Length: 367
Image (spheres, rainbow, N blue to C red):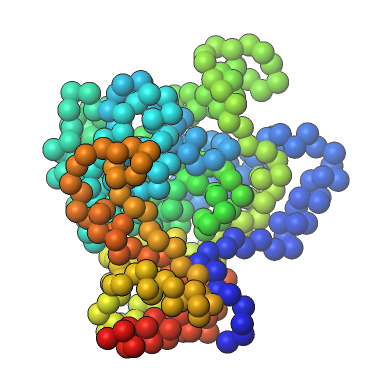
């Protein structure tokens, strides 16, 4: 091993992205979204099997627009997992809806359906199902579809971490809900720096989304507005990068699965490290997530060994931004023991072996 610090995550851009941007700039384009953005949307739609794709400026706004297009209004309750990136509840809090926190399954970190059932009230209008690290809930997606249908709720899929992941029935994650949302922020499997995408097969929803992101006007480049909308448009420079990133997606999907398999192989038998239930036949891990004992000391040891890690999301209800009472033992446990190991797609086998060796060394010494 050389002395290069192994980051927990970093994006991967190459000459192809640089060339695409330079070629676009030579065309003297307006940079705001246009033909390249349309091509990027088409590539995502084709990859996921969706009828429509709408890209926006980030993955938080994509969830906000998804909820608005699904008819969620101020004071409506929206069920969200207590383990997720805080963007999930913030996205509906932004326009006055009320996020209701529900605990997650210990094996998948997806919403616990029985606890969702208990949280439904007369004010509940939607469920945001987060496919944590590309995983799907144990009862299966059909159980959530039925629950939403039986209670007249919108099922929105926060698939920010799930591009390249599928349900066992063959549908891409994000296709089961009325709308599926993806993120292209720096750590994701493909990145445009910032960015989000919404997929749907519903023509009316797609119509609403396109107007919500572009001032509510009837078409680009005019000032005729048939509804209220905002400005959450994409850019052609991001699209140039996104197009090249999409061309590399399938290779990254395969490599991400190889990375997790190698970690699991080398850390088998290390009782202090526990992996979650990842179906590698159908789903693609975004990060390598584990529960570990003596997390703080392990993090420090790995950092001193040139290895970066990151603490997993703490329980949202306990964060100062929300401070909502409730007992959520699974998400509380993640807040105490959850750790993301180095997960970049460009990790070499040698680096993974080094990380695993250092983890073993730590627990051998500490025991």
